[in-house]
Image: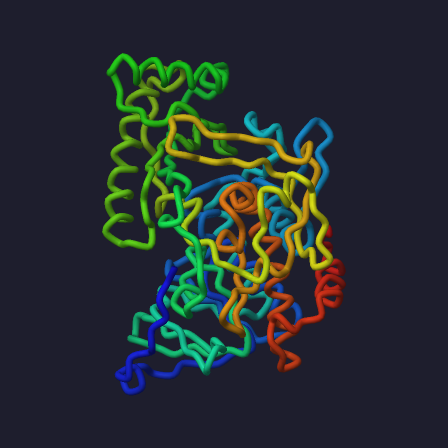
Length: 437
């Protein structure tokens, strides 16, 4: 659990005020951008803070596919809609997306070109009137009693204050919530999911490579590792076709036992992930048909993080909730993705829940305990380890962002707290946009 700390006195003279807005969103990943879009479309003035020079988070730094939009099985049904549909629609309009079946979850994915998605995210944000502030890292929070009123951020020009009537923490690691004193669960509460360095290979003979089934590839990795010929800590994952001829996208490496909120540990994990990536490239080139002339084309911008801090919220979504498909009056998003637990073993635990039928994510999971004026969206929601392993995927992060943005706009517009937002009105608003709840 975090310890609450006071804002240092020197901030008063050292930090320059920047601007205020109705809604401040911290983190420009899928949850954060959709939250900003939702708040702006609801009439709020919105500032979106991102530490990198582009938007998208895991969707543009790490991966090239959206999971969680559909139920599994041969007759996929959509479970996420609204503003996320606009994002997907723009990708298809630009011929930068396609559908793809996941062999592990038996669910339909949406693959895309992440370089195009970078542009889609920022165009949509600008068109909605969102004020974008990239290359900016939040380092502390501003409070008035138990209310979070803003953040202190390190920008290219120095330290700045960003204030808002309602704030959304979409940082993934609950950076705002943790600094505000919100209780959370992290690695100290038990094992968190493994990290993965993703990479792409170019000049692959994809016609031959696609003939190697996932199970066959996994068996080849396990055998090669057992012989001692290669150091391959994970004997699973994927090497998947992309929309670009001759290019394969991978999700193969595995780094475990890392507290990503510790810079030294995260640095070591990044280095280890790249070392593993090169070893998997060597294995593919030397052992797998179709990869003989392959070349390492790119590594992810930042290592892929699945789990770090999970806040303690007004409600904690549990494994029992999702297995039993417990209905919630304050539902704001739905999910049918299986429990996908990348644990320390060489394999991954896949567990379909509720016969693949969608279950509810309640609004209260986005409301932190102990503070007011703050919402979270994305993988730092309030959930136990198994429930989190299902709802952390990007379609659900976008759906949570849509609800958080709409709620923040309602709260800011009426001068009330996010926990005071009438849930029925929030639900009506996101349903009007196309949310499937």
